[in-house]
Length: 430
Image (tube, rainbow, N blue to C red; front, side, top):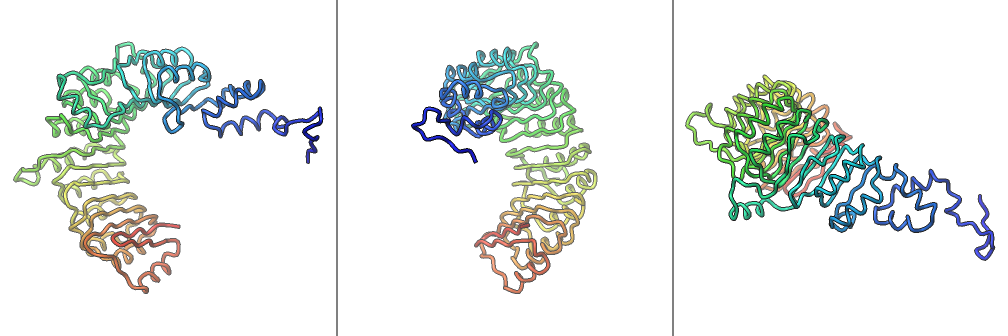
């Protein structure tokens, strides 16, 4: 134990001063950015320590840090603390001046996430960047209002992506709440190192633009297209270009894409044609679809037989899932460990029974069930050897089961907990 002199002693030593630099640096690493600025004013030693590069490998200046989203404030903070050790930067605002500063002084920056509120020139990006997230901090309905006042061919927000933009290392790109122009699609095609592309809540998507991107980036491993149906005229053509060109894709997500399924021939409905084309994606591991209606059990069966390596399947609002579709999924999806289906109003206890004894399934989520009973859910779950979590949402009827049925689950699967609400049950591993 260290015995300290009394406060009135001339030789009094502050307890914190005894701590070595390494210990102080560990303590400072848990302090918020605003408090770090205050720490720098305590004494000379702390001022030197707080500027140590290991504390500034990651900087988050979002509103959750209560940092004022002012361009001058952000730039001033970066000039004071952002050094060549900076690797991850999250900003509430980015402009050309900030990008130029990062390019000159942050040579090791690999991840940048920022809101874009004005035109920016990506020529200023650091060449070391591998992950880029750009978002316009507005809801999609605000973009729609803007489109009513300006030429639909002109983007509300312009991202300049010149031929000399340093993108040779970029591997992940996320663009949110922006309006795409044909030029932007062409420039995206030049990012030949991209492995992960996420387009979220964007307008102005065109078939020729998607074709240019997917053809040039046929090596993409992840492609997410979320909530981008507004202002799109040929959704079927866009889907066709995606699955035709991205044959090496492993993670595909397309959400909120309403497709017209008025075709009289079931085999020719857009959803079934889409699944037929998906069979060319032999490396597909994860598939998440929402709003693509008109699926059939026969088509899903052929898809799962061809793409046996798929391990995660999510179908939301792709038509009401019936017993035959559920049975097909569990029969042919031999490697599926995660399944999410919505709505399941046509699934009965017989469909639930088709899940029994699946060897690898771990997570199952079924929502809007109508004809499924809790005893059958419990009976099915205890037959799954690797189950981790099963959620079943049931409406129009309260869930009821006898004490004997609950005791059977505890006896056969003591590692599982059963949480029963009025209209849902969650069975999870402890």
